[in-house]
Image (tube, rainbow, N blue to C red):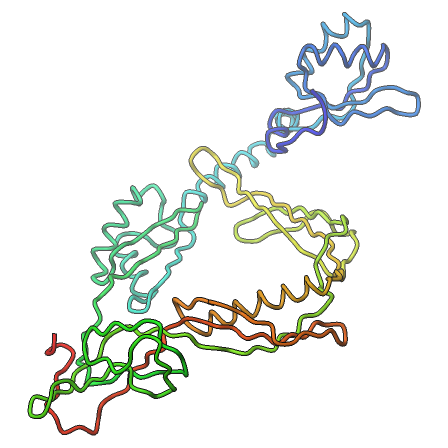
Length: 409
């Protein structure tokens, strides 16, 4: 198995060596290594045709019988990884003790809470959440193991916040995030005065359902903006009352649109050129360690991935990251007249439905005029839309008994 070995942390912990095959048939050696499932990577040949490769330390000790079998000889060049580092430390006891002390200190620091974030709501402030958390022992420089289970801790904090319906706690290494969802309170029911439902636009009525009040129009009637659709005046003579009209009225409405759609559109495309930058993470800071000498792109997109080092169940405040910056160019794509027209119509439909409100449906569309000029397609189109046409209008000029919304039902 060869190629480029992944997992730099694992590779470092195991240790590996750079080996040169000084004697023997390279092809036979590689075939035999493949049969024995030895992991070799970064294979290359020097000018003299001798094979160079990296091999993990455990696999290096398995090379001896293979070398005898193919009558080859190797020489070790560079040595990398934790085992060799520890061997050097053993010869420098003071430095080794300091390094060990650093690891212990790092472990102790990683068990502390360094930062507490709280996400407030409209009625529960961030300060209130942090105060409730502090009362339950959640604050900076607290030992993580003293906090207990996050579910139990969240319940205790929720009890200190009367308006909270749910509290969530997330541990991310030395950082704790607290999210609060407040209880939903029913809106106060306000008394509504008598009102009519009137037409908001010129239309032809397609549907009318009067839940309360007197319908003044019927299906297929043409109405103008402001006409009463469902009246809030009910009853006759002395029994006349003003009520809150309720109901649904839908109608056909016509809209004329002028659409200008270009025959060329700009798209973003990747050139294949990219820069890879590597970072070391220390706490909440990232220190760039490579990728300084790459080209400068006029336009680019960046994507990054960062991972913190884990020690058992604990996440340490150190780690590594990688960022890839890819060059982007703006390209122009030519459209046919039909494609440009369809793109313009699609955009106009979206804008029209958003304008006409929830439940609006385009029933028909008629192309009135089309021409191409100055690099764009210009069209005039008439849309027929079925939508809600009712608007509320208070009744204020009738000297009749009034029945409010809560009394009339």
